Image (cartoon, rainbow, N blue to C red; front, top):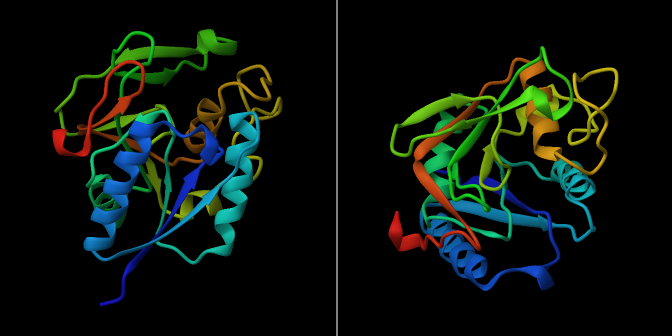
Amino acid sequence: MSSKRVVVCIPCSWSMVHREFFFSYTDMMKDAHDKGFDVEFVTCGKIYLHPNRETLASATEQYEVDYIFWVDVDQVYPKDTISTLAKYVDDGRLIVTGMTCDKKTGIHLGYTFEPGNRFFSGIKRTPLKTNQGLQKIDSLGFGGVMMSPEVLKKLSAPYFSFLHNETIFRDTTHFGEDFAFYWKCKRAGIDVWCDTDLQFGHLNTETVYSCDK
């Protein structure tokens, strides 16, 4: 049986990587390799996340892969994150992620779009409970997001910025790039899922090593 191919997108210069991220990333790559995944990675070190993610999304087009996996270098991930999330994509869930705590509060938050409001008053914070299985959400952070390449084919670039003619929110250019992407997914009818049993650490708040899952 041929290997499943995944491209890992890292929107940051390697010089800015946290040590804890490096350890968890190494564990995650080894686990993926041991389970038959063929892993490539692309990285980009621009100043702002929005152009980083935009560049990486375009870069994935050169790879014939089964999955696109996004990681952030201020997080740590359980070692089986890739294999766990890949199963959901195989089952037809085009975008799936795990639980990430808010760096400032330590609370696990999801976000719900409220089209009746303007700007970021139109995004409601929704605390999420851990260990509740798979939950459909409107928006979450972008670190630890696994998606099928079909997602980018269903959307149109730019993927990570707000445009006045397609959003209820003000054009923010370099702010809220994850909200922008998820809003476009919602408009395109693409469901977003969160595995609340899979928890990611957010550095400066908590550290979850790969053995702690």
